[in-house]
Image (tube, rainbow, N blue to C red):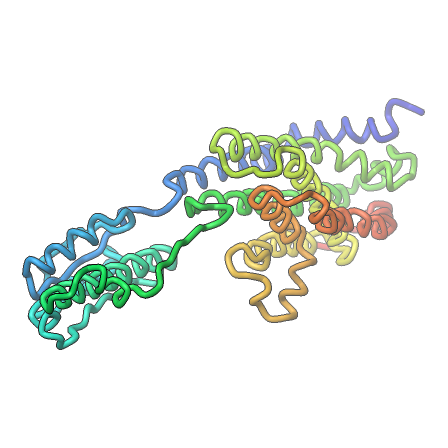
Amino acid sequence: MSKNTGILAIFRREWLRIASSKICIWGIFAAPLICLIIFLWMMSSGLPSRIPIAVVDLDNTTTTRTLIRQLDAFEKTDIKYKKLSFKEARLQMERMEVYAVLTIPKDFTKDAVSGNRPKLVYYTNNAFLISGSLLFQDLKTISTLASASVGLQTAEAKGLTENQIMPILQPITIDSHPLANPWLNYSVYLNNVIMPGILQLIILMFTVSCFGSEIKSGSGRDLLAMGNGSIVKVVAGKLLPYTIIYTGIALLFMSVFYYYNRFPLQSGFLPMFFNYFCLILAAQGAGVILLGIFRNYRLALSLASLIGMVSFSITGFSFPALAMDGSLSAISNFFPLRHFFLIYIDQALNGIPVGYSMYRYAALLAFVLLSVFFYGVIRKMLNDNVYEG
């Protein structure tokens, strides 16, 4: 076998192509690193805190001032503005200076003690879903506490003891235990899927591009000649450099997530590393499948980008796949990131035995096996060297 033919020759040739391409350097090396730094920095606090709100206190009594101090003591809430009119507070919300407005009506304390059931009114800006939801929790909590406090004072005034009052005010005691991510750290559950999703997107696009660019430049037949006419050698030689690079990027992600930031990794290093490695192979297989199905470089590249972006939504980490329409829930299984996400939940967060995740690993590897059926199409495209712009 000549040194100018075979898998190693194609391997060396592809390394040179990667090293001499600004698109490859920026897309494969710089983009994941920049995204990693930005997302970790954005979510470094773990959970949003000190979200600004406005309070309109029309009663201004000792009771309402105590209520406001209790609300301001909550970690997620920061009362930026007080003693405003409701019109001023509404304008501040419209200008996005605050994300919620709490209004305490006039004679609130007097009506509460006399049993007239006054209303605490609060508005949250749910155009910003996370901040709106977190503030809604705090405002609902403070409303419940205010109700309980008034009820306690009223009952004590009637001569009841605290032991007699509490079973009435709070008949059921809630003991909450968030599993897997007890800190409610957004970085734990977002970055562990967003970053692999970005990696999958890059793999899909550059897998399509590494073959499509040969067709575009008219070097497909030369590539086949280097592989001695074997499409298996061509595919292996072309994709192996990328596989090595992506594996290095995956190891970087794991080092930053699980060793530097101490994110949960219940089942240890190997199951998650194998998960990343299977995702890399599956995304490369999916890229070959796309090019083989559509047989058009530009169309396949566009669809690779589309599928990579849709994966973030259909994976199920932001909206449960089981709650989607039945057809969408079924389609989600055709996205490699879906299986990666479920393995991550089982192995990194829940720490269940690896055997329970084997069919998910198998689903990822199935993309590789399925891509083999399109090798003949790729070979024909390289041999014909017809670029359909």
